[in-house]
Amino acid sequence: MMRHIVLAATLLMAGPALAQASTMQVQNAWARATAPSAKVGGVFLTLIDSGGPDRLVSVASPVAATAELHETVNDQGIMKMRAVPVLPLEAGKPVELKPGSYHIMLMDLKRQLKPGDSFPITLTFEKAAPVTATVTVGKAGASGPEAMDHDMQHMQHMTKP
Image 1: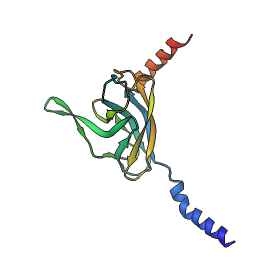
Image 2: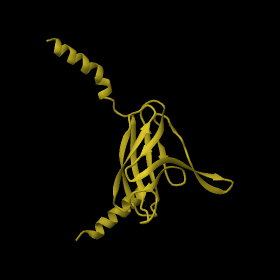
Image 3: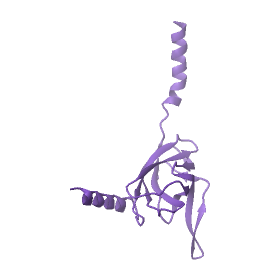
């Protein structure tokens, strides 16, 4: 009887930790295809925070030795990329990581990113539980997930008998 009480108490105390669901949602995670010898690639996605204010503090993917949050800025007419240590997030305000803005840089790629491939990326937040999303690779010149989806549907249609 005492063992059951101890077990029940332990489960009650652990329950909130075990049931912690992330308040972060990742949508439209995509990347452009890379050349066979490319060592860098980019990931684009939309983050939606349904909890309180938070910050994206790190990213990782098994396809690259390093993944970093970057921002493209216009410095006196010259476009430059720079690493960003954290990305502030507000509840209810989606943040789009897209070409020419915030994005995730994959450095020292371990393999070529080919159209139609997919790979995981894990986003770690200051407060929310980490989220692992699936990134779909589009063509090299894709401008966004919608264009990529259309290209992939066209490619699949072309390959069906």
